[in-house]
Image (cartoon, rainbow, N blue to C red; front, side, top):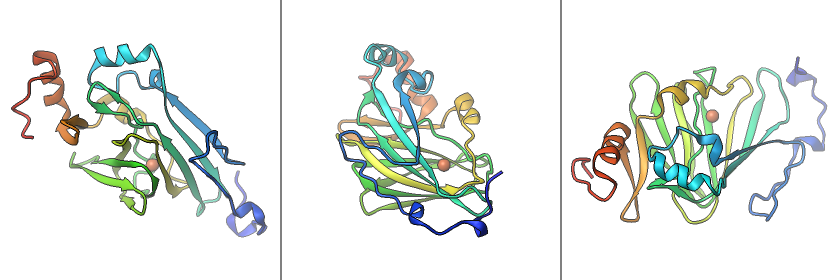
Length: 214
Ligand SMILES: [Fe+2]
């Protein structure tokens, strides 16, 4: 049971310094989660490229979660570092999730690098990409799956701020995956329909393209 917000003793513990661009970032009193490429089995369309890259098994992202309070009305701040890289033509991304409490929204704040949030509404399947970069914020509404994607050449760093009640539901997406993929097409991030991209990869290889409405 967490302490109620109203009981909190105001102190220095409510303030935190961080430097996500440090060579070995450390965030005191935050919980660290790391994902290597091997943790993303089944997420990328190009399975051959995935297996090839798995030989190096690079670190793809780190997220620290800082909970200054765990009451009903409290907020969690996630600090993310997503490395640059690709599997085939798909840019490195985070697993992506819904919130267990579907109504819960989230605010992302870009700190450095270049990338996007891929957003997909659970009920309508509608999707879009929202740019995430320095001096940009993205509002993720409730009922919306969200995944961070690094389309640049340097780490993408950001904050994600959400309710302690939100929770993470990875399972729903691990089964069906996002309906769209963001791939590098002639140096430009391009959003494609996942199943059409998969069919194209399977049938024609990646060098031929035409029917994808680019
Ligand atoms: Fe989230």
